[in-house]
Amino acid sequence: AAADVGVAVGSGEQVNLDAADVLIPGEDPRALSRLITLAKRTRGAVYANIVISVGVTLFLVTTVLLGELTSIFAGVALHEASALIVILNGMWVSGTGAQRVTTLVDLGRELGRDLAEALRVAIGLSDDDSSATA
Image 1 (cartoon, one colour):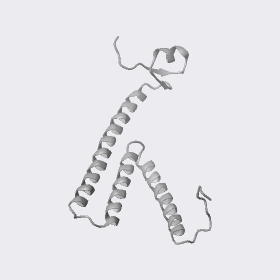
Image 2 (tube, one colour):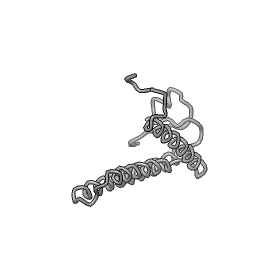
Image 3 (tube, one colour):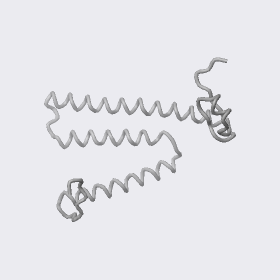
Image 4 (tube, helix red, strand yellow):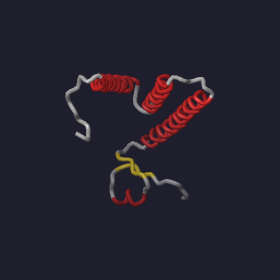
């Protein structure tokens, strides 16, 4: 038999490890189908993320060169918004709706804490000097 990839489902016995390129633990052969579906969704998300990133970068470079975008704030805000969209798009690849919402809420909390700390440092309210040069 000619195959590109050998897959074994079951235990990690040496016979299985020697014969297969990939070992899927457990006794459920449907796991392979789920992994293939996940791989296809991941590939789609990667392609979409590349298109978003390159598209926004080309837009920003073009508008700056043509003199249409003169606000550094607007350029940075658009770039960071596109980075957030890419992150969220990658996050949707796996998990269920509830897991996605929980992850998004946790991400929002962390982002809020980080922004609050950055603001405290920027206006000089933070007494904690945790820089590497201190």
